[in-house]
Amino acid sequence: ELAVSELPGVPGGVFNVRDDRTTKNGKFYDRYIVVSFADATLVLSVGETVEEMGKESGFLTSDPTLACSALGNGDKDGGIVQVCPGGVRHIRRVNNQVNVSQWSVPGIKKIECASANESQILIALAGGELIYFELDPMSGNLTEACTRDIGTDVCCLDVGPVPKGKSRSLFAVVGSRDSNVRLLSLAPASLLEPKSSTTLGATKPYSAALSIVDGGDGASELTMTVGLEDGSALRANVDPITGAISTSPSRRFLGARPVSVSRVTLDGSPSTLLLSSRPWIGRNGNGRHSMAPMSYAPLDHGCSFSNEAVREGIVATSGTTLRILSVGENGGNNALLGNDDDEAFNATNVSLRYTPRQMCLLSAKVGETGKKIVLALVESDYNDYGAEEKKSMGFDGTGRLKTTSKKIESKSNDDAMDMDEDSDDDANNEEKKEEADEEDEDDINTRLTPIRGPVPSGKGHWGSCVRLVDPQNACSTLDCVELNRNE
Image (cartoon, rainbow, N blue to C red):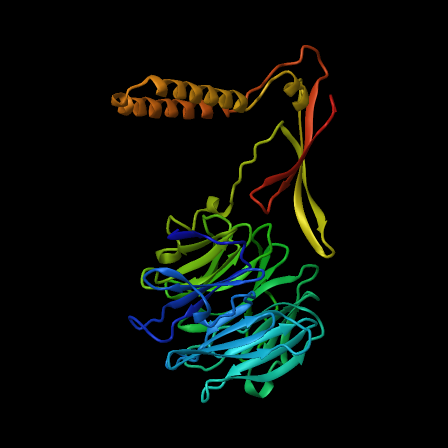
């Protein structure tokens, strides 16, 4: 973890924009970090310091950003493309002046999702209409090249990276709400024509990414990674000529949250960042694909990041924070990636009221179509009073009440002593106060250890409760219902 910064809200996405104007050591670094919110966009300029940009960046900051990318192949600055719900903006700097041209969505429709690389932009409107744009290498303008209606709402899409020495990606992956993933052609002679598809069954796609990875013996392979709403990820090889998806894709469960997929670079090799209730890194080496969990807090959105200080990093969001991470050399250092078997599991401790007896996963309906997985726990102890009875007896199993009263008493004593002490004794008083604070911390830690409490004099006493836990939010307790006496 290299940097953590608070954000003004919970973001809906984060993007990097490469700087094509300058190169150092033969490599292009990032110029902007773009953070998208529900109704706004935050643009951060990356240099010796990170500064917030306003209208001078050319970005539309009053709308969310669905996709953005630097345009051009590095030899020629093609500007920046920003896709918002209302249209596609092409931002160019001419004679030190920002020049913005915009393609607006016709009618009342909105752009649902989008993807862009150095020369290609693909957007999806509500209802399943796809519109494809290309950068004209001669004029430097964006042109609408093709439109296609797939007949169902689009969940996610990706135009893929441009191969080295090429001017375009030949395929795009599109995930739709009918639980299908389609591979479409981006070749000039067959724009947006379907090449192959695969069905996901009961679950729906959440995110998708095409990657060009090392297949061994110096050869490269085209792979498709799809993050699913049920917390698993599907990976399949794609024929680089015909666009056929392999008939035996691999699938792995990653966590309790829908999986977000994005491309990153580690050790100079293309890799995949997969974010669920725990972040994962997928990468190829020696002709074999491997996936490892990151020993880090859950992340919501992420993408690659590169500047002079962090050559190969990740910029990500977690809650209302923006974080810059470095995975380290060989992709398996002590900081983030774990290669041991026990690192494949992420443990979270939950304090319970009684001894857990049974548990099960429940599917709760959220809204009209959404679902949420919760964990139901049944806790009980024999020969024990219930929580309400203990409370009526004045018993506090955590010791918080006694600790609080002790702090109040200590504070009042300190105030009384301050009135009688001379200024010459201030240093001694500070030392005594620090020692007392250390003793208080030890006392607090001791008191926070749960203790047994009063034991019923007769038989047949039970304490029990039913607890609902949210596994997607650090196993926080959603509700805890204390049962009546002896239930």
